[in-house]
Amino acid sequence: MHIDWSALGSVFGVSLGATVLLVGLFTLGVAGLAKKESAQGGSAVAAATGAYVCFAACAAAVAYGISLIMSK
Image 1 (cartoon, one colour):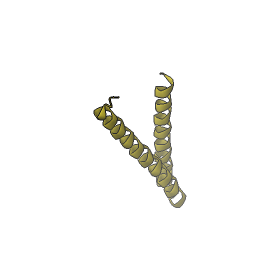
Image 2 (cartoon, one colour):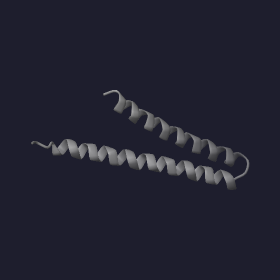
Image 3 (tube, helix red, strand yellow):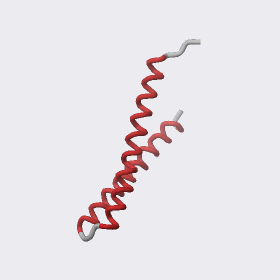
Image 4 (cartoon, helix red, strand yellow):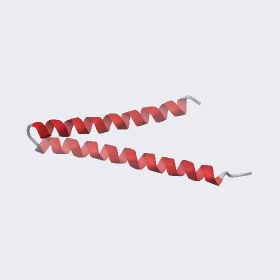
């Protein structure tokens, strides 16, 4: 049995990076929604818009991952 350690390391690195990125985006979205509650006027709209953009990016990344899995 032969294990390709470099390929395993690459998969680990990419999955770790993607996980950190998605968790960071989701955290920014939650923080933006929390800011919206305490903000007023234009900054509340900007905070909500930023939060929804972060959530949309998370959803797009998840959809892309599912499409990669289903295509094989």
